[in-house]
Amino acid sequence: MKSKEEKPILDLHICYKSNYETPTYLGKLIFNSYPININRNKDQFDIIYTKSFLTNNWDYNLSIKGNYITSYNRVVFVRIPRDSPPNKMKCPPFWDYSVLGSGPLHKIKKKNKNNIIQNMVQYSFSNKNIQNYYIPFLKKDELQTNESYIICLYSDENDFEGMQIINAHFYINTTDSIILIFLIIFIVVFLPLIFSLTYLCVLFKMNILKVKMQKLQLLNRKDEIEDRLKDELNLDQYESI
Image (cartoon, rainbow, N blue to C red):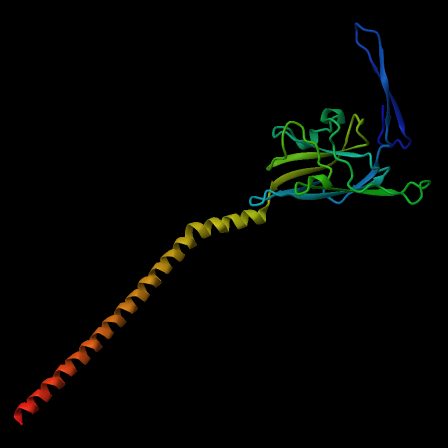
């Protein structure tokens, strides 16, 4: 029976036995020391994931401090069923999640190997550049919004029982939601209003132009009448002579 407080490297011998078969030795697994005195930069229940409506990008970081934290540790996200209370969920064996759990982005470097000190591992996840990140393995489903997950820390890929680190709830990015709402309002309300105002401005300018043309026509007509009157007056004067 393993204990989270055990400090040395553990050797585990695996055997198989049933009621109808003789015991079979399957092999030996070397376990990494279990991390203890875990501290994290998150509350007991926190939102660490945001998904964008517009860009579909997401990023988050998880810092874990503790004794015997090493680069062999693994992190897995396990979805909590809606009908299951989060406090009753337990971390399953890592084998249930294959060997695709995530490892630390930055490997731990100890200055003095004789003194075991509290180490920190920074887990960084993103879908922008997958090659530079260790992506968490999710069983059966993709990362979903409006779902709750438990984040389990494993000593290594051979761990039978993970240590629950934190509960997380994944949600849509609020900023992008607000932007999307304003965009919809703009399209539904302001865009027709802008077109209407533009149409009214065009009509107004056309009316102004029409009035100016009428004034110009009147002026031209006035000049024409004056010229005719002058011609008639000149003709009368000539006849009187």
